[in-house]
Length: 141
Image (tube, rainbow, N blue to C red):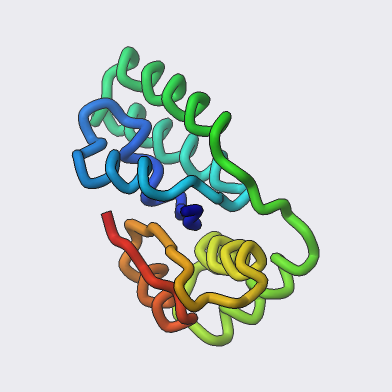
């Protein structure tokens, strides 16, 4: 069954040593649908981990390799006007930052705004609350 995956849920799948059993099971259960901008968000997180000394150069390289592998399997919601317009609406409805509003809007476009029984995999508390309030079944890895 497909599910919308926020970038915050995907970063641990890329970084060596952070993908726990629960995340790997979720990956097996739910095919990934992601926002078009998630690639940039994930790459930013990996680069920041390296800059801040949390991962080594070898771990960074491995993370980018894993990201490339994941990218080949996911389906992307493209940056269409509907996503942008819905993101603006979400900023008025929920306490979200711009990038998170785009994530939620992309998920809404993916499911044609029919959120019942649609899974949203998210590791960010604020975005998870907004997704839950929008009607998604939120899975926090």
